Length: 337
Ligand code: PBG
Image 1 (tube, helix red, strand yellow):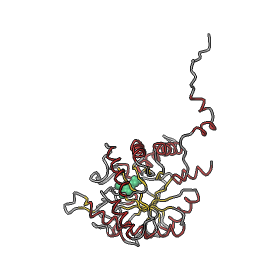
Image 2 (cartoon, rainbow, N blue to C red):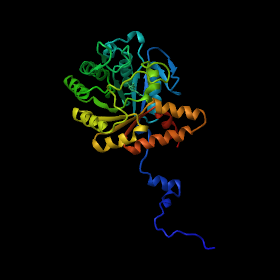
Image 3 (cartoon, helix red, strand yellow):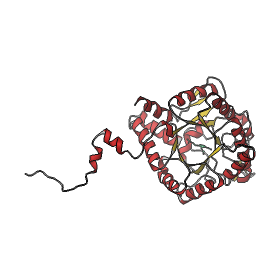
Image 4 (cartoon, rainbow, N blue to C red):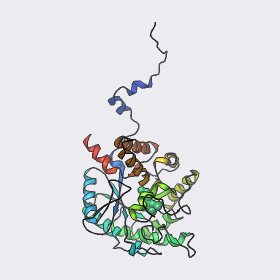
C-alpha cells in the first residue's frame, strides 16, 4: 500500500518542532518584571500568620514584610501592592482609620520605601479594611446604599496620606463614580503631581474575592464571598460597561487601568486593551489563586504548569502587568531557568 501523504504546503507544525523554534516563535513572554506581588500587612512584631484559604500567603508584620520585599526585589519583582489587616477595634462606620498617617498601611509604605527605594509600592485606596460593615464606602443611615460623594471625599484624603507616606501609585479599588478625578486633583493641589493612579476601572462584583476577604478580615468567614457589593462593582454579565468605566477613568487622569478578576475576564482585558492607550494591569485574584492551590494539593493538576499557563493567558489577552499571588513562586522558578 502506498504511504498516505497529504498534498498540503502549509504545515504549521514545522514551527513546533523544537523548544528552540517554539521559543523563537513565541508571541508572548512573561518575566518577573511583568508581575506585582500583593502582600498583606498587619500590626505586631515577627508575625507571619497563615491565611487558610490562600496557601503560601501570610499576614506579615512590618519587619517580616521587609524581609519579603527584600526577597521579591532580589528575584526581580518590581512592585508590591499592600493591603492592611486592620484591628477590629479601629474599624468604624466612617472609616476614620483610613486617613490616619500612622495606620499600619501607611507605616508599612514608609518602611518599605525607606529600605527599598527602588521597589514600586502600590497603596490600596478603599475603605473596606476600615469600615465596621466591610463595605468599600460610607453607608447611608438606612444601611442599604453606599454614599458616593461622601466616600470619594475620604478616598481623596486617604490618597494624600498614602502619597505623603511615599507610595508610587495610589490604587482606588472601590468603584465609586468620579474618584479618579477627585484623587488627581487632591494630589496635584498638594504637590504630588508625580504620584500615579492605578485605577481599578473594571472591577467586577465577583465571588472570586472570598479568600481575600478572609485575609483582611472584611468578609464573613472562610471562603465565603460575604457581603454584596453589586451596588458599586460591575455586573459580571457586562462588558460594554467595563469599556465605559475605563474611558471615564482615563479621561479623569488615570495612569494605569485595571481589570479584575483576570482569568475569567480575558475578554474584558482584551476589549479594554483595544479601547484605551494606557497600560493595562490585570489582577489575578485570591479565588483564582486558591482554586489552583486546592486542586494542586489534591494532585489533580500540575501547580507550576497551571500557574504559568494562567499567567501567560492574561498577558496574551493584553495585560501589560499582572497582580498575582504567584509572583514570588513564578520568579523563583524563573531565576532557576
Ligand atoms: C477591596 C478589595 C478587594 C480585593 C482587592 N481590594 C475585595 C473586594 O472588593 O471585596 C480583592 C483581591 C483579591 O481577591 O485577591 N477594596
